[in-house]
Image (cartoon, rainbow, N blue to C red):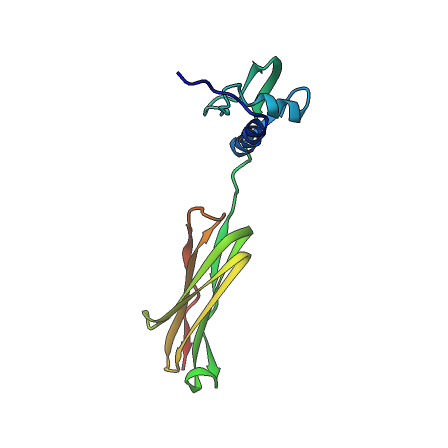
Length: 185
């Protein structure tokens, strides 16, 4: 049978780990003082505690000190709404191809998000002839453009995309929208 001893240096490291564990679990220490409560958060055997899911608070007495640990209120989930716009296709002169037809798209979000991918598609006579995308970070707006060499026809720009509200979060799609069709002679 082995005997466990707590040396002052080791206890301080465990206390720091307990404070870090409390911060990660979203707990708030209340009691005589945060420092004293943090010290009490490490039992004499050196094992830090955690608050199980579904439990909002508990009280305890360790080493003669009484303290209460309470989970802080959960932060409301980030509410974001994003939508895409597609510009009317237009003819340009000069530049790539010596002139052509271009379509632009934008994605607008109600708040700053981690990433926005904006997709743009150019259709001629109902058939996709070009596409492109761009990605921006920490923004409320994304934009992309695409172009093809000039050829007469009826053009439409389509736009959609994706956004990621927070780093490491899931991607959400932005619904596909179409511009009015434009005949370019």
